[in-house]
Image 1 (cartoon, rainbow, N blue to C red):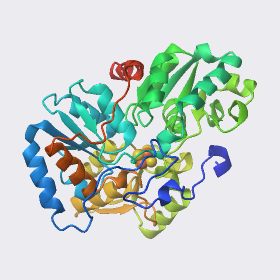
Image 2: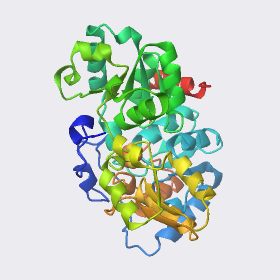
Image 3: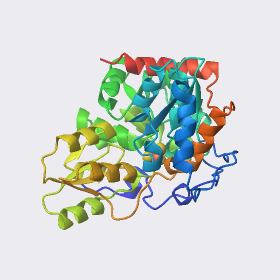
Image 4: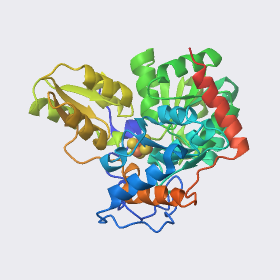
Length: 393
Ligand code: SF4
């Protein structure tokens, strides 16, 4: 099978977002795109670790620090719990005694935590500019326009939206309002099966790759059953007939980290390390997932490495901070990053020790910085979509 950039609408070159300098820079096009307002300690301050410890100790059970798997080591060191975005939001909800949830992750994750936690808990994002390029690729206006296009094509009433966890609260609310569900990379198949029991078509937002990989590799759909809706083109770049014929209407979004892995990366690592197992995340492009030995969510990748035989060799296609930690945790196995070039999630990396120290010290001094709040109307519908996911068989 030949696949091209044109087919999947992904430009594998670095996005401007990926080239952002870390630290205090702001990205005007990001999910929130604002500059962190705090007076941050210098990154060179030799007392940062001691300051973080002292502030955390002072706050005690009033603070609960969540660390996403893709965070830097210096931040993970202070996390009370680590995990993917959904696990972390649920962990926060299970800690009602914590007044402050410090979410070391990106903006949409903090929103989900706010939706799932109680009203008396406040969710703090240490750097407000930590957005997600994938979540940015589907705005509420664009998605509302898409729904109008589907309505004009006469298919909106048979289409069920399924949105990936990696989307803004607005998109989750849209999904809930239109009878759809949220999914994670672990339960995408179950969510799609449920959606096809409710309707004849799925509008999958915002990650085209997770939608395509799940539909084609796990559910028996063909590539021809999938069409790509491009929000930057009139009518998504599709005719009414193409929309009517499709089963999966995939939003043209992707992760700027996982979208960079290519078939060349897989071929190159197989040549370099004979016998290597290639294990990739389902946010990777279809041809990469097809060429890999295994595909699975971040939690799947962690468990696969735990269960692997000593001496086995692994090339992992996911974010570099996690791959480095896995390599360190498994010295008896050879664990390498799938690509030869560095591939951090630049927005995740915006949360660093100075931002964490600033957030914790502010809380310890009685100021609550960078609170992420989802308005009541958005929360109601977003929660409806999340609840449908929780009720999936
Ligand atoms: S790794 Fe990709 S999906 Fe996750 S936060 Fe970064 S850009 Fe978004």
